[in-house]
Length: 88
Image 1 (cartoon, helix red, strand yellow):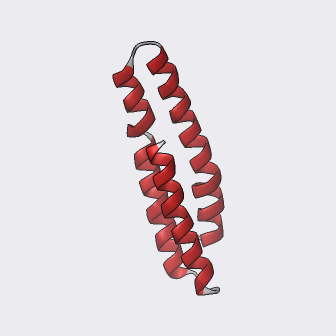
Image 2 (spheres, one colour):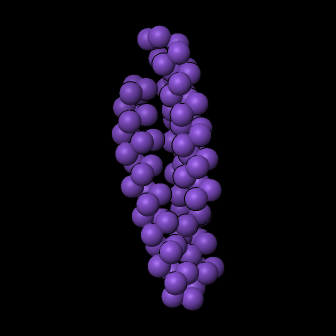
């Protein structure tokens, strides 16, 4: 798959949707005295998605035929973004 598609569609837009949904669900569950379910909703669903996206961007960057600095920037931004989204 093209790096642009994987980065923008899956990492940026998909990552925002998945992580906001998981965080909102976790917050709702914690506020309703269900912290274990909140933890599961907050981390156990978003972490696999973030890991899969990170691997996808990394592999797409390897196959990218354009300027190498663009592929490297996509990798760096995705690593930082997925870590930030997974931790918060």
